[in-house]
Length: 165
Image (cartoon, rainbow, N blue to C red; front, top):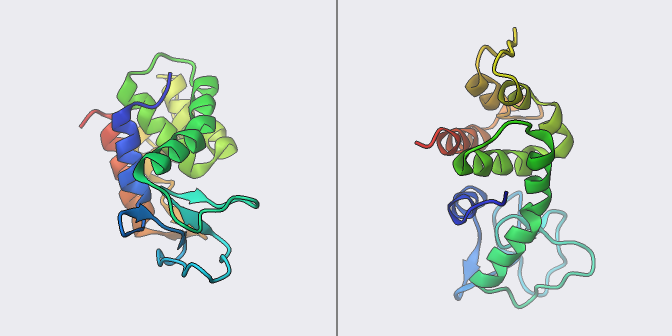
C-alpha cells in the first residue's frame, strides 16, 4: 500500500509550511520563521512540508508546490514500508494513511514497539496502561515529558483519519 492523496493532504495540513512569493522557503523548524537567504542554516532548517535539509541539499531559491509534494512523498516512503512490515492485519486506506502519518512522526522503532501496533495486530490485546487503542494513540502527545498542544492536536487528526471521521 501507499499513502493516498487524501493522506498526503492531511499530512501537509499537520506539517505546515512557509511560503513566500508563491514558493516554499527554508524555515527554522523550531520557530516556523523563514531563514533569510544569505543567513547560515540553523539546526533544524526545513523546507516544504517538514523536510529537514540534509548536508549537500540546496534550496536557497525555494521550491514549488509540486517539488514540495514530491519531496514529502519521498520522505514518507520509509513510514509506508514500516507500516507494511509491522502491521499484520488488513487495513482500509484511511487506516493505513493514519498509521503512516503516525509512524512518520514518532519514528520506525517507536512505532514498531508501540501499544498502538499491539492493539491493531491483536484484537484481543489488553493493556493495563492504555485501556483502548485511542488512549494508546493519544499517549504520544509529549515531548520532554510534557504534553505539547501541537502533538495532541496531531494525534486527534490522525485518529479522525484512522476512524474515517
